[in-house]
Figure (spheres, rainbow, N blue to C red):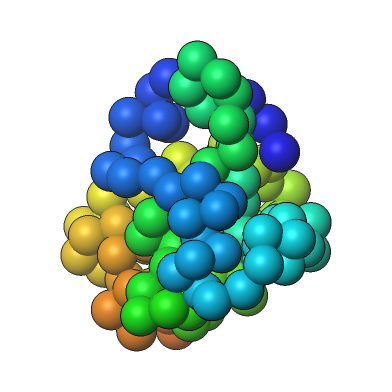
Amino acid sequence: MTEIDVNIDGLVPAWLTLPDIAEELGVEVTRVRQLVKEGQLIAVRRGENRVLQVPAEFIKDGKVVKGLAGTLTLLRDDGFADEEMLEWLFTADDTLPGTPAQALRENRGTEVKRRAQALAV
């Protein structure tokens, strides 16, 4: 859990606090903290109060977006820090098209994972 860079913060269209995520998922906040600790979600400190927040695009229909956890694992294995992962996930890729985060939300995770794997080469 890191402090968010202003440039990367600008790439992410919307954020949710951990209690908001817990409500969306129908779980306790402690479970959301566990998801962050396990690397299934990325949470960063934002704003004046440095509140932990997660990109809203990581949650869809009351669940963590399919393929996100696997993509985050691949990026971590490639040596990416949390901020670098956010930058990669929210930077437009003309070959997808859109951002990797959008592609994951649209159930195009296979393409996203291929690109993440290619980063290691």
